[in-house]
Length: 244
Figure 1 (cartoon, one colour):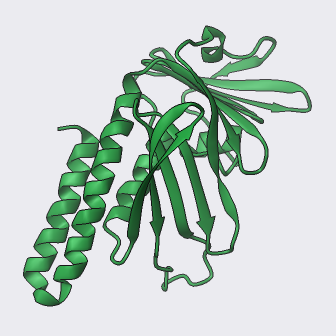
Figure 2 (cartoon, rainbow, N blue to C red):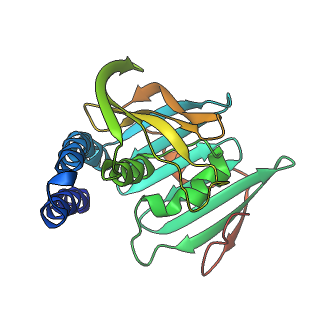
């Protein structure tokens, strides 16, 4: 079973066991949770396919900026307005551009790290706070699936020429323990039949919207995306600095 499949199975188990332990009063909530997980499972299975694809996808962020994802397993590159973050079998590369000068940190990929939600801080640093990658979308969907009362509606759209399944998640409860914090009020995730993320938009409790929408998709890559930009100053490090 894949890691995503494992998370889904655990979520179903929690919902069902919770219903048995607490009695009939939560059966309807448990059924809703199971329904949510079922919808998630279908989309998560599609998302899992994308890790094996070779492709280039361009996205437009809600703030008007653009970003690009270039993948040729095991290599993946995320290019944005402020730099790039690259994972290859040999190294992790984080490049930032300021005052027309590009500097990069390069770390040996001794643990054979691949793209995951754990790198979200670097993707935000290079592409902006509204950027969402496929692994990040999986994490958000997985977390939302078992929140009591959350509603998930399914639809289809064609985005950048790709037929996509979309999940619109609403009725997300506020965090009563931290009422002043901004959190997601609702969001929509769209995934193409080939597993590539085509859209993610979220509305915060502060009324602000953020997300990405795919604009173009192709099955070829420019291998220069997996390298530092020409003229960049590269420093080899033991570990990458955390973005500010």
